[in-house]
Image (cartoon, rainbow, N blue to C red; front, side, top):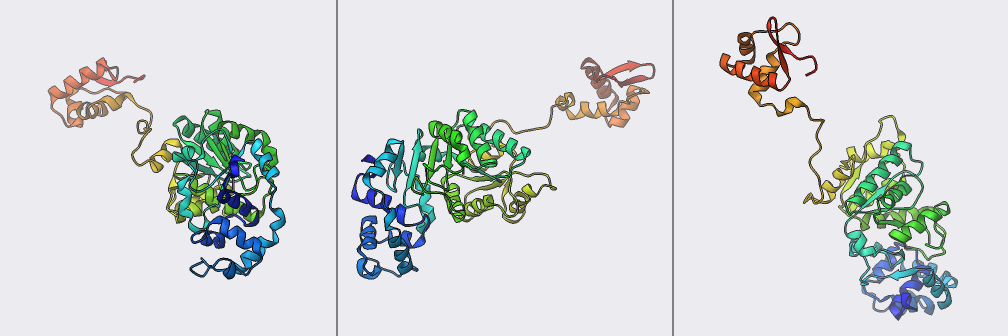
Length: 384
């Protein structure tokens, strides 16, 4: 079958059923041995050093790792099972493939062995301009609104939105990007066939139709609590920056933020009410980790795209008619009383200008509707 054609690719597929994602022992072995050699050594039953003479340095925990992998040999799928997953639209993406996102290589020994991918978009291309948007599962209405609007605005500007497919902020981010006809990437902590949380079956189908579903775990694998934390390193590494929309002080989203910080990727956080426990984590990483405070897509793009590509005009407060006045005319206007009225000479003294300048400015201000004549001279118009 095309998804595992070649002995090395099939070896990676089989090893994904034996080793847990992110195992440093396997990552270290792959520096000096091919996946086929490692698989043969695991299945041979020999002592690791004897089975892998090419290992040039000590690999911590190698013996115990081999013991775990050999105990899981019964999980190795048949070719027919792999073909069934391929018929359901799942494909294997390995390091060196055109679709492999090379930014994952910064994970070193913890780099994914391979990725199970499902969807219409190209994973590598989608992640070239991407932002991770993560946060609490038990999100507030405020957090869900911000995540949806932020993701939609990013998608409209051609940025892919990466998240974890969970309830709360994750699902709001995915839906915001989908609603704007953008590309979104869901990195699951379960197998693609299992699709956790299962209540997002329709959402995952929509993501696959418009974006990409990604997992390191075999398609039928259920999630585990540690698996969510392991998954988070991929979310952080895939994107050009990570935004935490809402997070408590103990939150899985802060795990993603920590990975982004450790990988020297831009880290951002959305501020929330100081009374909200679900914003306490965001405020913490702004204060302690140097996360950039962001309130919208423009702020995010400014951080992840230093060139400012795609940015509109700088945001400003509402424009006032007085903003268009030159400094001298504005000084004369400030010298005009609101009710009683004042003569040109008094206005000139208060404004610090000569009489002729005051008279000229008052005429211009009257023509523009700022001032009007009265019994005692000039005063501000009530509707100015």
